[in-house]
Length: 440
Image 1: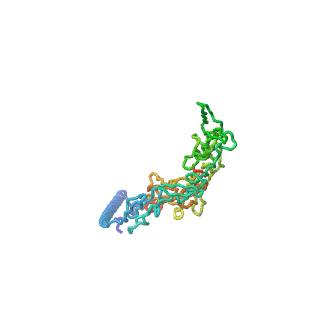
Image 2: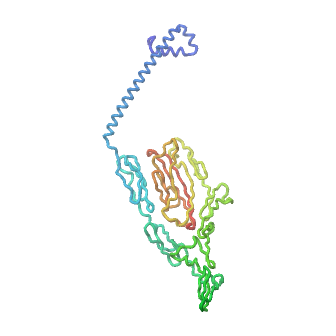
Image 3: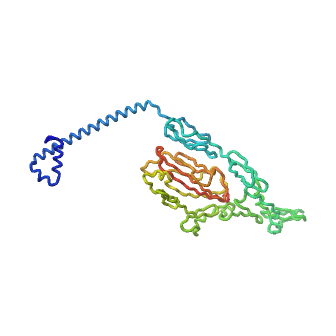
């Protein structure tokens, strides 16, 4: 190594930078030191120039490689899957059929999807599943007619043929027994003397509103009460009251069951919301949920922790999973959020009807999922519901079978988020449905 080599200059500079080195380097004067520093600067400048030249060469080679690959790729036709049409009586979401693209299907009201709700184009040019079809939902399959009534299918509707003694659109009501013309046997309020006037040798009699003129066995005239509840309770006639009709002298009145009150029209019933009254209906720590004719006190709880998975309650009706360890794939595939929802439904609600919707919420500045998958993952409501998407980003829980109360159903639905076919998160909604005894 010569006295003026680059390595010698670097060692000299390092030696001069050490504390106490100045005393031992008295042999170098100021001019020599400046000369050494200039030589070192020239060395670094040369190294910088060679480094920049190497970077330029690397960029040029990468650009050439990119052009070559692009030309080859342009000659290769991209893989695509066969085009798919919307099923009859249904809809399709997605118009791209290249590899990794998804197509989603749903059915119109009155139909249910048979087959996969989503398919993905594979690298071999085939779909992950067969094209689904929509099947008509049989209204009579849910046995909507009560008390032995016979269900007859119609166009998007049905009708019930009721046995003797039963009436109503679902044969749910008892035919009101025949009431004597007087309304109530032995009750003088239901029979009154007519108002009569002699006019040119003839007697003309009339009755008050709500009574009709009738003759007794002795040939005398009497005003008998008109039983409106009986007349309008016959098959084919409109009902006077939403719930129950009580005949009164010359008129009638409507009544409602416990937990309901009569509305201003005097005929309809509306639910009494016990949860908004001044009196606290539920104990501390629970939430009051109004139901048809009553209420429920609920206090949903988060799942018990297990291993490295635990949940925390972030609101009265939502739990969130605590952060997962970096190496725990099982933890990341468990629900990120669990929410609780409560619905109140009347009996014999006409189906199909959408009860609940699920959608993703995007965070500003963060790319949201480009694919969602929905499903029913639990509960005690087998066969009553289907979960299908209404558009690319929204799923709907649809009631497809008529429910008769009182009863309580539970259904758990989930939504899985994917970004470029990579799983991101799963969310679960636990839905409890309280079905009233009555159809209002």
